[in-house]
Length: 339
Ligand code: PEP
Ligand code: MN
Image (cartoon, rainbow, N blue to C red; front, side, top):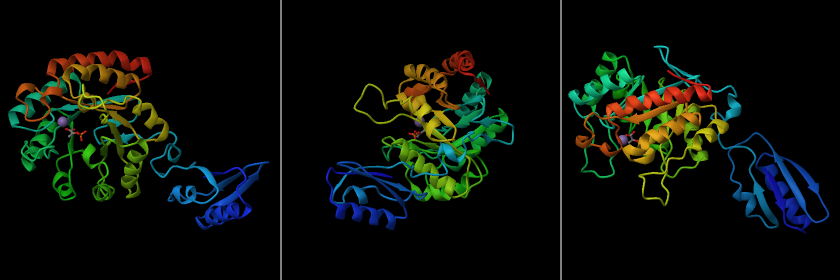
């Protein structure tokens, strides 16, 4: 931490700040100029609040130079993390992985129709919610266990891995036999008890950015899972809440290169929730590939007008197939291929 004292701060004030830094576990390096004193606090601890120093008399400003997350930081694994699956699929390597499927699992007919079409177009992972976090308690809440069984069956039939959202701790055990990746939704990004439990699981976790979460908050949430011993964490940008109302959320493409700089974890883009509009999903998916996304998460429905959730942002299967063709052309321009 760097502490700049106010001009002409008294020796007593400076000494008090030094004592506090030492008490917090820092080794203190002092440099004194004609008017100003700057203190450098060096140490490996990450658990401190810079406001404790900011509020002291004579302090002008304080800068944190270490991040509050350690395991999620790029320095922990500079070469990057590749999440590997038993079938050979890898997320975070040279190949970009496309995950697609309906927002919610609605019926066998729906899931099998969509699964066959996305598999044919080149998706490698089937998405579908069995437990749905809905803004209204009166909206469709998901098929639960029946939905999980259908996902596994469709995944096995069309050679797709399966990702589905876990909303609470009690669902983890229930989901384990049926899914390959646990999705933690935007609304649960800071459900720390859930994240801690997922740290004990030996299956990959896809952690979505909260609707108003900073990158630091996202990475601190990933840290909960990593600190529990589960190193297979995949992050996901799914749009954030801004003042714009034209789109459902504002898709933050810059999150992709920024997370790649701050963290070694693979980064996914979800342009479906990121825009909330079917006509804007493909452009944002193409942009995400160009920006370096390691995976895409895309909602597809064969009858979106009849979908029980998120129909407006679900691609028709043909639109999805067209998008696959486009990203197959874009990926090589940025040194990637589609898995
Ligand atoms: C979803 O993937 O359908 C979903 C609910 O996503 P999010 O948590 O990003 O809103
Ligand atoms: Mn959805």
